[in-house]
Length: 110
Length: 126
Image 1 (cartoon, rainbow over the protein chains, first blue to last red):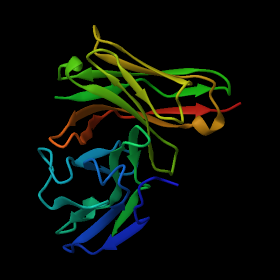
Image 2: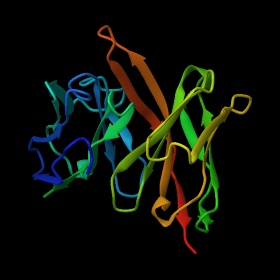
Image 3: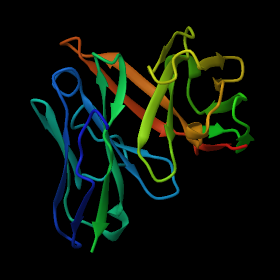
């Protein structure tokens, strides 16, 4: 059972806005910053958001991150077919002394 | 262009060892660490550990502590991960990723993995 909880799946239609949640605890999200990754089937993960809400160069501003307390969220606006992928949150856990990932959320664009 | 290139697929028998390489291009290898992450087919991501590109310091997850050894060769900008006493549940795609990790003003960890290598499939089967 992953330390971080994500919904197994979310879906939306083109143009819609969807959010993916990531729930943790005081030893991880409540203390350290969250990063988000997109993984298209058959490919390596790609960094989408780091430091809770910062977008690396080249990541469209349709992707945004936020955090409150021990939960974080990834929002995708103006949904496009190419956004169909698995999304993972990750954070350092001070109790486990390492990095923990969420179980992943499969986004389906209907 | 910053990129990481990993070694090819491996097939090993239970009890054997495997060593995966990850060669870095396009950045100062010693300015970042390298993390290793694996993914069992059809499942999620699991962080295995980290090695500093500067001084070779390491951190390992509790799951592989004692079975994994991460090393670097700064002369070739290459990181290695060796996993011993392989079991069938070690069958996975192993990724390396450039790891930027620093501490914020509140002594909180700020960390991310970018970019990732293409992945190396390690199959453990008798």
